[in-house]
Amino acid sequence: MTGLVRSELIKLLGLPSAWAAIGVGLLVAPVIAFITASSSSSAGADAGFQELAFGVVGAIILGVVAVSSEYLAEGDSSTGSRQITTSLTVLPSRTKFLVVKAAALVLVVGALALAAAAATVVITQSVLGAAAPETGTGTVLRVTGVVLYWVLTALLAAGITLMTRSGILPLTILVLNTSVVSVTYLLSRVVPAANYLPDLAGARMFVHEVESSAEIAPVTGGLVMTAWVAVVLVAAVAVFRRRDA
Amino acid sequence: MTARAELIKVLTLPATWLTLLGTLFVTVVLDVAFIAAAGQGQTGSTSALDVGLASIGYAQAGFLILGVLTVTSEYGGQVFTSLTAVPRRLELQVVKGLILVAVSIPAAILMVTVSTLLARLALPDAAQAGAGELLGAIGGATVYLALTTLLAAAVAVAVRRSLPAVALLLGYYFILGPYVRDRTEHASFLPDTAGYSLWFPGGAEGAPSPAVGFAVVLAWSLVAFAAATAAFVRRDA
Image (cartoon, rainbow over all chains, first blue to last red; front, side):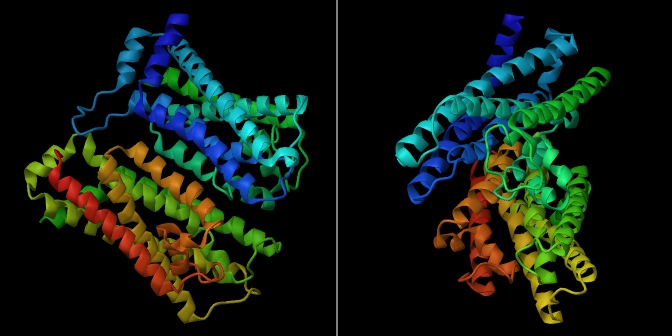
């Protein structure tokens, strides 16, 4: 099993897009947090953490390319062959294949999220000084929330990509939804139930000052998001097991 | 001949229709959401035209994807056939760009018209735009969406892969662009922010005139497409 996870790690980290995604994930949140912290005198309780909700775009790309790279047949000298055929020849058990792929993705995204969150917290603290959110057990819990949020978002992206077999749709949905005014946020202002969509609920794990029509505790938010991701993954696995790769 | 061939290629691509129909569907859903929000007094603007145009900011994602996919669909091996049939690369590339603009214009007109009319009919009590203002907004938005499609195609020619091109464009238009827009006034020379003054009459204060916005967007699209064409002419497919 370890060997299989290792092979999936090699596949994932052999993708140039994966490294681009890691770069994006490492840079976006700390850089935006730095600019925001240096340009504003008053900082909210969410300084730094708000930015980590944008940084998740790196995790989204990783989740998408981890799966879409198996199906993509592009390039000037492409012959239209797909890596998935080789992957399933090597490891014919489809469930096992998905488990090791997910494990590799969780490892990479988890490490990325931890590094990005740590960097953002350190930057926010050093720029804002006393005005920064207090550090303590709360910070550790919130950073854990960030890591969970990024990992779950990457799994969500991978699950959708597995169903569509193309990265365009999941990438569009998820990136549009990371925008400054996200689609789900707009919806939540019209339909209060939209607060329980995965991204809005999950962000409650680390963003505390939310102007919203529903109160959701951090743990509840995390559980709601986990439930969404579980449903999508179960559906994706069911589809993948039945169809012809 | 090249034009006819390129038109057939674009229109027979399932991705073209899936993208455009998907965009239309999402645009209408967002229109309904924006209209509902306006009905509850939750939108910044009370003008029916502003509410109707609000969805276009999201609909542009569909046009970005259209521009990328028409180009990258060549890179599954088809580009060799295309270049065998039309070895004149400059002609092939320019015709492809023109056809793409020609396809995106009717699609844009349809989406903008549907959005603005929906808001107009659903919000009879809101401030209504005159016919001239309405046509101006529909025209401005259509021109913006067509030029943005061309810009996306140019990026796709440079990258030659659909996912990286889409990620770059969406990351810029939906994350980096809006972020920069809120922080510096120089942003009005960027293609997305300049576009707002072209198609969103109720936009930010101190925004350049629609004519300046048009000139900026046009310049970005043409320069990008020229650079992409130069690359395509020089490199190995």
